[in-house]
Image 1: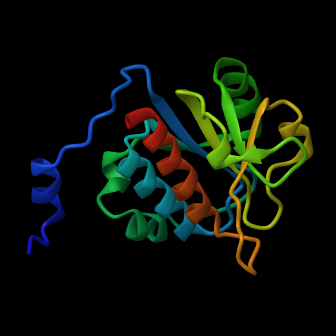
Image 2 (image 1 turned 90 degrees about the horizontal axis):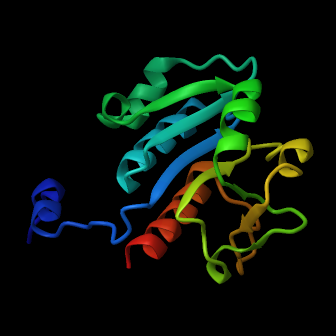
Length: 170
């Protein structure tokens, strides 16, 4: 049994069929440093061009982020940006897909995700602000048939990012 994932994926490469495919993972005012590290690692897993963290006055210990992100901390492009930067540099220049339970959201598995997109998740407790959601045309939710109707933000981004990868690769 092969337990070395590096060797396994050398022998079983996964390449996108679409040269146009481009994913940026983004999260809005994440309060938990471990979630930031998990999202950096996830971005590295799915081949995202970058991971963005829209921050306010949150102050995160980089050592905790680094510990969770592992070697992806130095390998994956990621950065903290301000709300203003997101609104002026990213919203007007990218297709943004909001991962949120809100009016107008469609089932993640019942829609075609944009080939080039920023996949944006909200904070652990407040989600994405209404004024930002109003500026976003694509909104998706993850169907949850079980008794719990919420999901950790890094887990939710994982589900959505791998669905995007499935759609653009297979």
